[in-house]
Amino acid sequence: MVRGVRSEPDALPPISPLAAYRLRWKRRRALWRALRARHALTAVTRHPATASGAILGGVCLRNERIRLPHFLAHHRALGVDRFLIVDNASDDGTTAYLRDQPDVSLWTTGASYRAARFGMDWLNWLLTRYGHGHWCLTVDADELLVYPDYETRRLPALTAWLDRTRRPAFGALMLDLYPRGRLGDGARHDDPLQTLRWFDAGPYSVKRQSPAGNLWVQGGPRARVFFADDPRRAPTLNKLPLVRWRRGMAYVNSTHAMLPRKLNAWYDGPGGAQPSGVLLHTKFLPDIVARSAQERGRAQHFHTPAAFGDYYDRIAQRPDLWSEGSCRYDEPEQLAELGLLHGWSWKG
Image 1 (cartoon, helix red, strand yellow):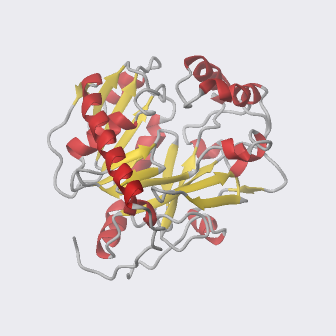
Image 2 (cartoon, rainbow, N blue to C red; image 1 turned 120 degrees about the vertical axis):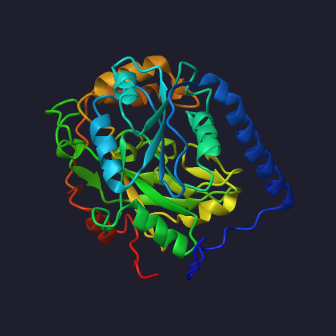
């Protein structure tokens, strides 16, 4: 790792020896699950070994054909060299499209997404097998990573700076974007940001959880509209998507939390002091109503799917997420001014 000045994150709260022991076993179980999960994956296209220094993108998806051209173009332009993608039984042309992409190594599976810990068992295996020593960006197909100056300082510049300042991970807020008008209305554009132009600047709640030390960030339009009566059920919005991967690391709750626990200290959420970005979340494209009806039937997206039937019912009612407090998205610098991400000096 390149020498440089390191800015330590705030120390995580101490935990007992018993809690530390349990976390070690939790990490080992996650790695064992990943090892077993490899048997569920069928390689479709697997390209030659990745060059030293290449940046890898890990994705697990299903039926994302309409998003993929922009998603891939955005992250290619950002600096991802090779994508490791698991396609979970798509039937909308996603598989054929990805098979033709020269920078995509593709695996397919018909196994249960929920049983694979929402795809993380599969991705933990691919990151362990191919990601060691690489910076790895693990995102969903409806997420677009942005950070200050991202259009001129691409991921190789960011990861070089992270190496120079001895930061092994880079966190991001998942920021829900939404249209003005009822869900399901409006034209679809190749660029989802032409359809989804609005976001909530706040409020966002930020808590540090024990024992793993990961954040728990909630808020935004889904909390405001769908979970106002029970905000603790609102989606978790903190993620740790960009990590210099080492064998023995594991995501344990989507990309919201990692082990070893010290990695979680490198993101302190909206208003925090650690450098961070934003994952622009493009969930609410016009197909959201039909997709939600399908996903309710599949029951693959929550630990207790029956408890979230009212959430899908509300989406089916096609509410308007826009409010007088909504902000129109412009650029990451705007998000920095609002405290939703934290910028930094590239000279560090």
